[in-house]
Image (cartoon, rainbow, N blue to C red; front, side):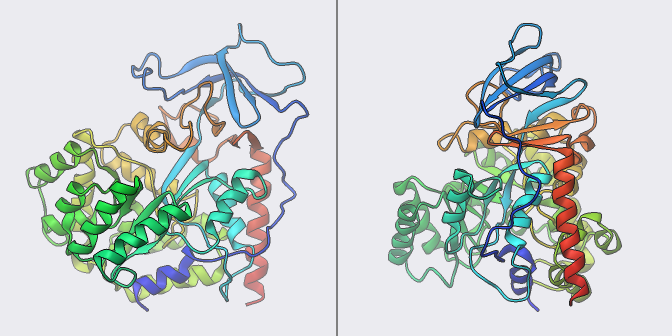
Length: 461
């Protein structure tokens, strides 16, 4: 089975036709006021840049409907009458995290997977603290899914969606490429998804028309285009880093910081962001420990059919990205490149490419974040990569990614200071998405329901 076919069936394109309604419902109040009391706040505001003011102690944060309306000292800010109060004593409140290269099953039926899988994926994102997803491959009716979530008809993170793929099969001429860009803009997609296989001429037409239509394009770097042209032509993000590796010959020989310097400088100069997806890519290239992958506890939430596909990939060890005997060299080159991009001040955005090989939505952050730490990225900047920098990326869509008045109420309550230990992110005390609050007990109930469904499905196979 090819990698493309495997990834297709392993979790990115699967649907649920009817919503799955869980018994664990979000907290609602008659007045629609929720208050986090006596909580330590990581506002993630640009002005809070010194170690002394990155955490605001003993705060009160007031939420009304889907907005933060006030943040201030618990000794001075009043609690609105009738508000539901969440005890934040000793806990830390920060913006909800983002998945900047995620996938969401489409609204179309595929055989062999549970019908509830779509809602389970959306729930898993939230359980992992992910309140915003940049979906990187659109499908029919997915825009309706986005609207249903935004209106409250369906539970899930806020979605910003790329349309169907631009590749050598869907683009046949410069004129048709331009027409396809206009079509995606008119349909309401948030960005264009670039896949391998495009010619330079077709890529140039896409880039030029995207600029005219004021719509971003992002994703892979086609081989015929190359990383330099992708940067110069305005790709909003470079995802997965393999475009750099191809240009530098980093698949099978050790690279140095000096080798990487020109491309790093070009990336910074043109303000192109990077979404590394390092944990997944170590699996794809063959550098990950297969026994550890198969022992991940979060696999209990994925359908058996999906897990079987992932295991077949480990057994076959093939595909266009697999580098085999040189995988460890390749992986180290990627780590060094990420370190150099960070050191140069390139914008790095948090993303895991879930659901893919052993990358479970939401819970995959616990696999990606340690790779960022390994590259020397500070705890604070890792948090920025999934919060305020994402809010800046989507500044034309909404205000979120910071804890301050006027921002969308996407919040993560954790039991310790993530600046000291990022592991506190992996088991949040609660998650708020657009003003809807889910306690740890509710999150555990949702996860237990998914696990029980998976176990029952496995018995029936």
